[in-house]
Length: 286
Image: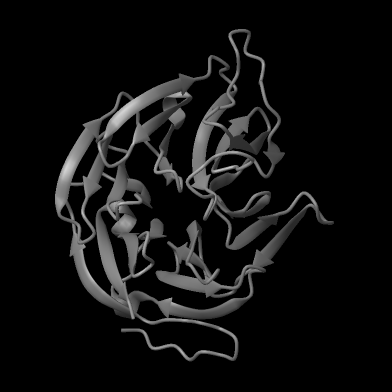
């Protein structure tokens, strides 16, 4: 267990290793929790989605036509799966493992890379943005709103049908802290990129001296940000303005080349895709 010291006004927790699991994974690149508490995994190399229960027991799988890279599950329990190699997005019912529809772009310069659900967007959709898709288009990556279940890709003429928020063409994963506020992992770098269009400057980079090659970002119910450092074999905990609070998990706790992470819906478990996507660690939040 990693013991942390709280500071006034801060609610922080330690983590105790509960279990680990591996269901003949090829390479897991994305992970997200359903509203029922199950965990959905993207097995990129094996072209399938895998559903497990809160302790990692295998429940179901769904074979897909193209490599699934990232997954976001909204508060309405709708899953969005990005498939960069086929320039497509799947919308699924994650607990039933049923594909609701598929949207693909015919524009060869467009690719769907990553996805992030907006925390606490409620069960109803009016005036809500439940999810963003990270869409690479020519020279940049844009965060596109998925609003009213509309997936904003290009039309039959190849024209983009919606305007997104310009972030960075090198982004591999991003996290929507809230509507219009993004934290991003930039490929090959050791900093976090902050994007807030309503602020100046529009973009900021936050260098973290103790992290190498950040690969994924998530947040807990207290608003703390967690970043996986693949090159540094650790997990950082940050404030929403990206100040480092601590490093609650590192190689001493079994962290080795982490590539993705998420909390379950109750925020009592933390899941870390470990060993470059070959296994998943389950930590109790204590």
